[in-house]
Image (cartoon, rainbow, N blue to C red; front, top):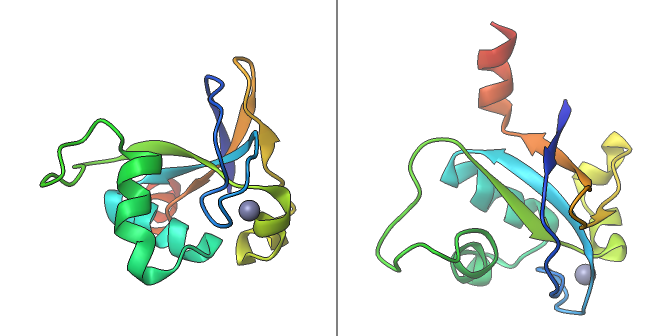
Length: 116
Ligand SMILES: [Zn+2]
């Protein structure tokens, strides 16, 4: 259900509440999955596109959408994450350091493919 991705530390704020946090979770899958993940975290629908571009795809030109599978690491505080359906899997966000093993959610369609 969860795999782990290595990450590099970045300062910043929670994508949901905007307060400063050093904790993150990851999402692996298509751009559609990344956007769905932000909605699951509690990002309002009218803010989700701007949040995906700034928090997940900062290097992407405004007219572009990522193609294929990608992993995005998203800053989210423990309080916001605890309110999501994802927290029921027993996962908690981790502090983002060079050696952090970031809990990463794989898109449901990709999980089906991998199970064969
Ligand atoms: Zn928060």
